[in-house]
Length: 83
Image: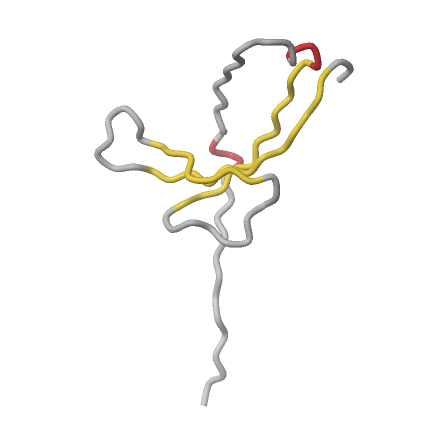
C-alpha cells in the first residue's frame, strides 16, 4: 500500500471483572511476541497501518475488532514415564 507505513505490536489483554466501563484492559504492549505472559492475559498481534501523511500534528484514534476465528489456544503438557 503506497503512502502508508506499518508497525506490528503484541498486546497483552486481561478481562477485568466488575469494572463496568473497562471490561478489557491492555496490560502490556511489546514489539516482539512476549516469551512470558502476565497472569490471566491473552496476546493479540495487531498490525497498525497509518498514512505517512498522518505524521503531521493530529490525534489519531481507531477501534480494532478481533474476530473469534483468529483465536488460538495453546496447550502445554508434560510427559512422564510409566513404571
